[in-house]
Length: 190
Image (tube, rainbow, N blue to C red; front, side):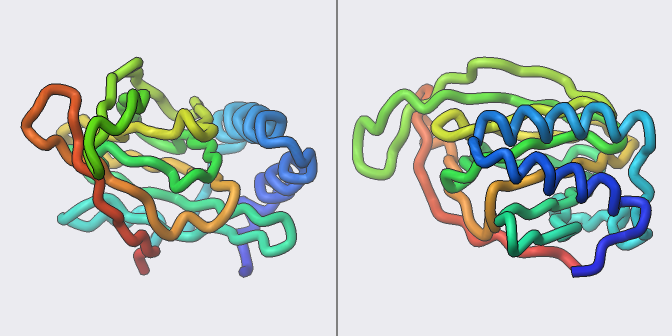
């Protein structure tokens, strides 16, 4: 896939990190890379990466690295858009805010009291501003992302240790801390 010229130096740094081989080292290096690169250089993207849609956030492929097995995905969040509680299908991820602000709710899975029903406890809520990044490494991979600003678009960059084409979404089942699991297929927006 051809990348945007202004993004090429970032992609090269992501490739260097992926060559480290060990997941924690890769994630830490990518987190450092995003936090140093984004505020210093910005990330100028073509206009189609900036477009929102009314019914939910957009996922757009920025780079797929067949050799090293990672993908970089830009997500565009309209005002008030959010995910449900979800996992990352066992794939590590580093997420950085390119523009705007995101709210992150991190959850810990505490067991499966009955088939298909899981107990989760919210462990942390934080706000991430442009230039900030965080990592999710399984089994600590459950969270909710939200652009809670009523009038501004936010952009995030997600670097996955593979192709994240599905995940499990956990929907409240009406009982405290209990959520029903359902599989969700993920695709890219045009």
